[in-house]
Length: 366
Image (cartoon, rainbow, N blue to C red; front, side, top):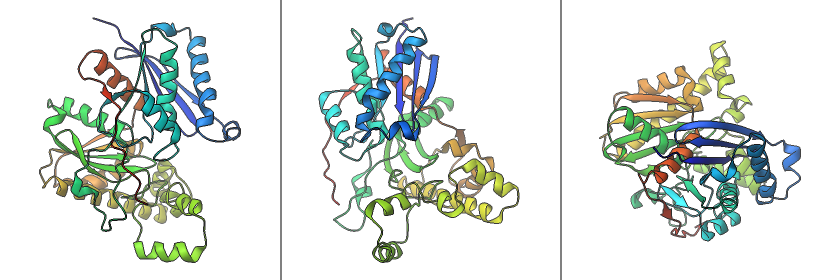
């Protein structure tokens, strides 16, 4: 059997995670932490490129890896233009769009840039991304918001949702493309997607805080109240956005973004923490119900994943609410590095073909 050597890279806001895989076997995984003081030296996320890729290369050399033997470099996809799910070969257009941050600035924009740089240093190596956060397969009817000035955007935890859905399909002995699943990623942000025969035909925008509130995001807020509040508060655009994304949800109600802490406080008898935790679970269950409607109730399974899915009380609450729709399966945690490596391995083994990045350049309506 051929041995394919893969480097997976996942840049985050305050860390850069990477792993080396030989086929399915993980040979090394590292998390490189970046302090706020270190990052403050750089004007933008893009200016962190040399710093972060240098740390990865140095760590690989220190660990004694033959870097030239790694032929598949895969990075987390960033906020480029919308794409269908799949594995994409990094090209100049993708690099330009990631550098510009055409859908916003996020550390994941460095994923294709770092992967491409390292691949260019290795003879015969290629750079890829897979299932980026801008994965867009939603039905046209799902794009309507109620006003032509605004159109729904598909920005969600595509990498983990897709990887977990494929894992579940394998576990039940079915092809992912034959199943109708509702998949809920429960983390700092929450996204709930309707996976209809292998395509996510509807999903809430987990980046902007649409849908259920989460440990850090406000979720869907009452339109009239937020209009009045924005005009009356005299806050800046950046302050309002931070209130909705980063300082909403648990942070706003309980002054913490730790789902573990909220669970422990609730267990210790903190009535407020218990009620807020129940309210989040309640909203997640409602969103799952919405996605079941999208698939006309023909749901084969409901899949709960992400770090918050370790909370058995919360997943049980959700299951009691939605269990009448379909069986509920819990896959706690997420391993984006493994998901990236598995996607690269599928390309290496010719189980799928890498696609060309040539997206529909959907203009921002707002």
